[in-house]
View (cartoon, rainbow, N blue to C red):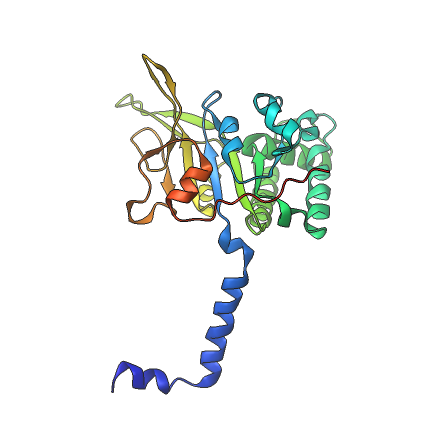
Length: 273
């Protein structure tokens, strides 16, 4: 029996089911977007890199002063920066609850259909805001988290909300900081995503891309670059880089990277009056 004859005998309801799944995939706006966990130390170029993303770029900033280097792009309307969350008070937490309300409202109104890239800056300060709210709800604001009671609720909030952001009809980038680990035997220093507990492994696995801003100093100055593949010091990976489309180090230009891998890099109209 040939392969064609076998196909002809497939029940019509099964063929119909497969066709409907294919149509859902083709009509899913999330399939034309991507997600990236962008890591780097202070001054490595994370925030500067965001100006090269598909526009308009919406940044929810929990990092105090994190958007000061891109004021020109905010003024032009290319970047929309919500910086109110930077004023979080651990003794009187409010930022995470306000952010949830803002996200719910914007999702319901279809706001993100008109955004090119959504950025959460950063994972660590956002996670801190989540923990602040958990401690407030427990009646112990500003105190140290209780290992057996507070970290599990924080972990669930992080995973649940990352899933929501992954489903947005635009590109999604979450910035993160790095934590150094030193091997006491060899003295080798490696860097990993700074987060709580096993999240150092589970959270990066949720993203399409795990990139590191890894600048290199030379006699000509600082060469800013994006690491897309692991080195001995950093863990990085890329699903966009299949078949060698991306080098280990790429120029820190999001739209150029998207074009290089054949991904849509078109901007959307700016949200200006």
